Structures are given as C-alpha cells and as structure tokens.
Length: 494
Image (cartoon, rainbow, N blue to C red; front, side, top):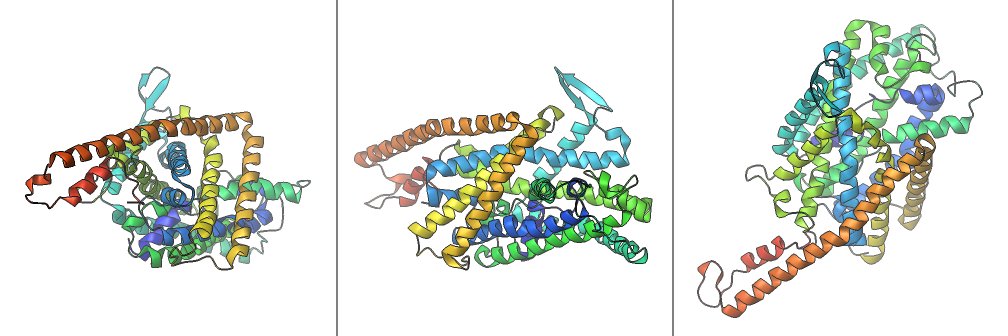
C-alpha cells in the first residue's frame, strides 16, 4: 500500500464518515455535539495516533500492536493483547454487515430482519437478512484474500462514494442555514435542565466510539510501502479527514432544526438519510443511503485486513496451529486466518449475539492502555531503538498522553457500567479470565514443541544426518532455522 490507500484504510478502520454520529446530537445537543467533535480528537484520537505513529515506525511488522506489546511488555501481555482484541472483533465486525442490511432494508423492505425466514435451527432463525450479511462477508473476504493492497485501493474508491453524498448534504444544508438565517448551535444541550457535564459525558461516550481504531492499520505494516515514512503522514491526514468528515455534514444537517419528524432532538443511527430527504428530496435520501451501504462494507473490509492478522501472529509465535498462518503462494495472505475470522463474524451476525457488543468498550480500551504501557517500557528499556517518528516533547508529552488516555478509558468503563449494569462487567471478566487461563496452557504446549524440536535436531546432529542430502561438513542452516521457526520461534525475535 502506498500513502493514499493507507489514508483510506485508516479512515475506514476508524470512521467511515458521519454515518452513525447522529445520536450524539439528540443525546447532548447541537452545541455540545459540535464541541465534542472538535475536543474528542485532542483528548482521545490524537494521543492514540501519536502512540501508533512512534511504535508503528519503530516496529513496522505484520501483526502490529501485538508485537509492540510483546517487545515492550513480554509474551504474556502480548498474548492477552492479541486474544482480547481478536475476541473483541467477533461482535464488532458483525455490526457492519448488519448495518449494511439495515440501510438496504430502508430501500428494499423485503430484506428486513424476519421478513423472509429460510429455515430455523432450534431457536436460531436463518432469514434472507442473514443470508445477505453472509454474502457481504464472502465478497470482502475474497477481496482480502487478494492482499492488503487490494483492500487499500478499493478503500480509496469507497471513500469517494461515501464522502460525496455527505459533501452534497453539507452544501445544501449550508445553503439553508444561510438563506433561512438558522443558527445550528443555538442550544448547547439537548434539553432545558440538562447539565453541561451530563451533556459532555454522555456525548463523549458516543463520540469516542467514532474516534477509535487508530492502531488497526498497524497489523498490516508488513504490506505497506515504506511504513517508517508513510504511517505518520497517513495518521495525520486521517485525523484531519475524519474530523472534517464528522463536522461539516453535522453542521449542514442541523439546518432541519430541533423539532419536527427529522429534527435533531429525534436523531438516531441512520437519521442522515431522512434528513437528506427533508433538505433536498428523495434523490438525496437515496444517495445518502447508498453512501451508508458502501461505508458499512468498506469498514468491514478494512477491519478484516487488520483483525485477521492477529490469529496469524499468534500462530507464528506457536500459540495456535501452524496452518492458521499458512500464506497463499500468490498473494502472501494468511488464508486460514482470514477465512476462519470471517466464518466467526458470519455466525455473530445472528441477532441473538448482538447484546454481546457491550464488552467492546472495555476490551478496546484495555488494548489501548497496553500499547501506552509498551511505549513507556520501550522508552525506558530501549532508548537507542530507532524511532523514525518520535513523539515530540519528551516525557512531558508521554505523561499527558498517558493521563488523557487512561482518564478517558476509565471514564468510558464507568459510563458503560452505568448504561449496561453488571452484565457488561461480567461479560468482560469472562473473556479476560478465559484469556488469562488460556495462556499457560498454550505456552506449555509451545514450550513442549520447542523442546521436542530441539531434541530432534540434536539427535539428527549426533547421527550425522545431512539435511537434503548435502555431503561434507556443510549443514543446511536454512533448514535448521525453518525447523526452529516451525516449533514456534517468536517472529519479532527471529
């Protein structure tokens, strides 16, 4: 991937456009909503992007943040990072095909959930809606099997398709704001009596979801063109693009006012389509809906490229079977890792699994804090490590980044608990507990394989066996390295 596809890949790994930002305004009000779109990047996005820029250029390898944590904190925490973020992806990734069918059902009512049931398996209903979700997953699994370059190039096309309707909405909305003399931020909060702190806190919880995922592209660093040079630039331009992509359409959409069927007081996910219809008629409503269709599949494609590298990295390090990381000869893609992840995502598209998404915030922020800890550890333990991009400001900047990301993560966990209750905490503890118990089992299996491989190598050496039939005293060191690698040598250390 070159620079422009890399920007597009980050754009869809984090945002996908203004689609989904609508509840921010009905929850917090127009003034606070616009303020949060501008403030959230400063306290959440930019700090995380800076961490990703330094670690991503210092350790630009396939598997990305898994290897950052391994280099900084060791194998145990790297395992937790890889497993927890991959498990988190099960419910996170299932949202995008479901989002696609949601937009599609607004155009074709027959594909709505439960309209056409194909068959039932116990309590699970297999309907046309789920079949379309699977179709989306199959198509973009095939795109991913052709390499991250294809994913990046297709993301550029999808970005144009997704952003064009929002640019039109912005222009028409701006015309109404000016011609009708409407103040888009006349009200700071959503309703009279709502405190500023409540509006800020509730809105931040929503907007941080739309500003997370800056590390996602790091897992395909091995397929980037000059990541040491391009990654910081791509992160910088992506931050600007995403802020503008939220800000301008939101301002334009506020031209509909507060009340009425499409007023900002009633905005929910997908409201931009109806807003577009009110501002310009059915043609723009359909255009925005089609943009939402493409945004959902583009986000799925970009994040599949990211998440599918995690089981592959775990396989390379000996925790999962070798076939998980086996690559195609032509495109050098981890075939089983991509297909296996997609199968899991298809299963989680069933509506019965939708409530599992409540542990997403916990696991996402655990991953961010592990990356910050790895950054600090590497600054202390490896001060001479080559860092093509280095966070400016020294330890003062790192201290501010650590405080900001920790505070936002803790606060988000509290908000998640207040919103979902103990169920969210229980789900998170189950996943984390399972990962903690899994590590010693897989680590012991890995150690046993390494010991067995070493013993076989020693026995062969003692017997004077020449690898591949070579004569004389020349040994096939490449073959010996391969045996050690198959036994589970950690890929970064190798």
